[in-house]
Each structure stands twice: as structure tokens, then as C-alpha cells.
Amino acid sequence: MVKQIAERADLLPKLAQLFRSRGYEGTSLAAIAAATGLGKGSLYHFFPRGKPEMAQAVLDETAAWFARAVLGPLRHPGPPRVAIREMCRALEAHHKGGTQICAFALFAADETQTLFAAPLRMHFQQWIEALARVLVLAGRGAAAARTEAFDAVACIQGAIILARAAEDGRVFAGAVARLEARLCA
Amino acid sequence: MVKQIAERADLLPKLAQLFRSRGYEGTSLAAIAAATGLGKGSLYHFFPRGKPEMAQAVLDETAAWFARAVLGPLRHPGPPRVAIREMCRALEAHHKGGTQICAFALFAADETQTLFAAPLRMHFQQWIEALARVLVLAGRGAAAARTEAFDAVACIQGAIILARAAEDGRVFAGAVARLEARLCA
DNA sequence: AATCTGTTTTACCATTCGGTACAGTCTTAT
DNA sequence: ATAAGACTGTACCGAATGGTAAAACAGATT
Picture 1 (cartoon, chains in turn purple, red, brown, orange):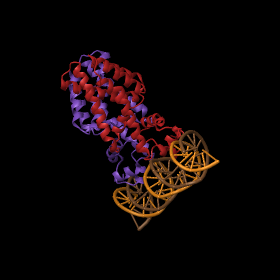
Picture 2 (picture 1 turned 180 degrees about the vertical axis):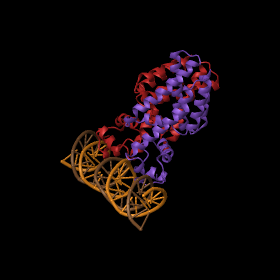
Picture 3 (picture 1 turned 45 degrees about the vertical axis):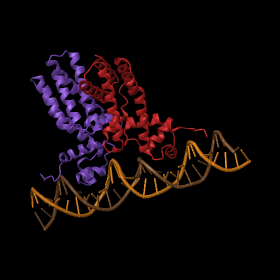
Picture 4 (picture 1 turned 135 degrees about the vertical axis):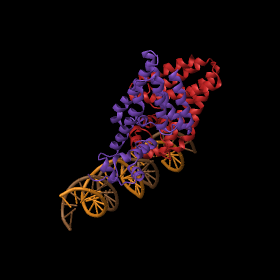
């Protein structure tokens, strides 16, 4: 086995940061090459199908993180408030005060990329369902739990947008704190 | 005065639709020319400074609509629940079941367009403040009204994202209905 | 030393990008 | 009638786009 000087996985964080801060269309291969220090040829060695494959890889990695850091605690048996707390901590860390937009929300806004539609729908659906189940464990009725879970996820996504517009990271932390209190009530 | 065959204002709806569905970077002049039926030369007649001016015009028009249809009722003296109802009806109509993203949210996600940062910040700030004032009239304390107004706006923005991801307009209508009930409680 | 494999570099391609130049066509005022 | 101004279509520009081809390089294996 030949030692890999650079690995695909090493590029993903920088790729994710680029896409999340400038959008899919707004991120050029030249910008990616500059940010990673690799030529376009090298990029195509790791992602033979180009930019769409890079975006897909970012989405896959984000989905993996999300399954581990959010869905995991939510689905794990245990006190509801612990699961909710872990979800909130993970979100705060991932979005860094709301300055980093959700990669899924980014592609949800862009309807030209219909190839991402299915994973997107699944992502939010799984999130809402897992959170609703926790809320049922916390004593809510089935229907109320589902609507409350939807509103909670919506509130998170909206708070990221508002935090970016306000250019103030504290508003995101505040929104998450209020959400946690509301869900644990 | 020479009669204007086409007016700038006539182009704005199509421009808004393009930007809102494909993003700023994702909307090319060729696409705009095709959608409007005008050549690039004609477009530059109405918008001498090109694409940024077109986006600015869309933002301005959206801001005008928003001031009329949302801020107006919120600031008008009258029963709080009437103001809230008018806001919700206006949002439902404007976003057409969540299929049409908020033009402001669109540019909030894209940090490359820093020239839109100030209007963006003002837009959401004014909205939250106006709604908070209505909630104070409805009996809330000042601090609670402000956080509740923030969460309400965040919930709206997030619901649009979720509605687009789910490709189901009903979820947006449901979220707005729940919001109205919550605010009027 | 020669080979092999994975990686990087460089140069290049066709297309599209935002934007410009300008000739020409309308409509209206004089 | 004619001049002036409002508008339109076409052709074009340099730069940047996403993407490709292949030579060159490095490290391990033989």
C-alpha cells in the first residue's frame, strides 16, 4: 500500500466550509483549489465526477456527523432531557454560534440541485421523528410531539439565518437555550 | 414624455422568481434574458449596473411589500390578534405554501454578498421589534415579547426551508397556523 | 536498477460568464 | 417631416467557468 500524501477525507472539512459559506454555485473549482492547495487535476483524482461529487461528499459527511451527534443521543434509551441537551450542545458546536449555515438547509434553498432532494427530505424527516419520539417519552401526546418537534427544528434553522443576518453569534446560542428549556418543560 | 414599452417594474416579478428559486450566483444573465424575453442589452438599459442592481431591486421591492403587508398591520393600532392574523395571511400568500423562499433569507445564507448585509439586518430587526410590540400590547412582558417574537420569525424562516425540503406545501401552512394560535394565546 | 502505483503538476479545452458596443427600430414631441 | 429619446437585438469582448489529458514525480516493491 502506497502512503497517501493527501486523502479525500482531509479535503472534506475545507470543502464543507467553502460550500457552507459561499453556496454551491458560488464556490468555484479555482477557489477550492486555492483553499486546499491542490491543483484541479488532483481534485479530480479524488472526485472524478467533479463538483457535484464534492458537494455529495460534504452532504454525506454531514449526514454521518448528524447521525452520530444528534440522532444517536435522540434514539438512545435514556432520560429525554439528556437526549435533548446533547442535541443542543452538538448543534451549538457544529454551527459555531450560527455563523455556519446548515449544509442541508443550503441545498434545500437551491432547487436547481434536485439530485439532493431525497437525502434532504430524509434528513429533516428523521430528525423530526427522532425528536418527536423523545418528546413522547417526556410525556407529550403523539400529535403534539410531532408538531412540537417540527417547530423546534424549524426554529433552529431559522435561528441560523437570523444569526447570520444579525452577524451576532449570541442570538443563536440564546435561541438554542430557549429551545432546550421549552422542550424539557 | 415617451411611452415606455417595458418598465423596470414589469421585470421585477420574474427577476424575483429567478433569484428566489436559483440563488444569486445560480442565476445567469442568459437565464434572465431567456425568462424575460429581453436581450442582455435591454436588461442593461433598465439595470445599468448589472446583476447586483437587479438583486438590489428585488430586495427593495420585497422590502416595500413587507413594509406594506406585514409591518403596516403590525404597527397599526388595533387588536393584537388582528395584526397577527394579517401578518400570517400575508406570509402565506407571499411564500405560496413555502415553495418560494424568502428573498432576504436567500441573501443571508450567502456571505459573499456583503453589500446586502445592512438591509438584511434591518429587515429582520424591524420585523422582530414590530412583532414584539404587538405582543406587549397582548399582555406579554417586554423581555418575553422580544424572545417570543424572535422565535416566531425564526420558526417562519425555518418552516420555509423544511417545506422546500419536504416538497409539501401543507407543512408551511400548518406551521403558520400553529404560530398564529401560539401568538394569540 | 527497474517497475509499478498513486499523486501532483502543467497546459489545455470548449463553454459560459458578466458586461459592452452599437446599429437599428419604435413612439412621441416639435 | 423630422429630430430626439426610449427601447431592442445582435454580435462581440476578455475573463472565468467546469473539466480533461498527459507528462512528471515520489515512494514502495521487486
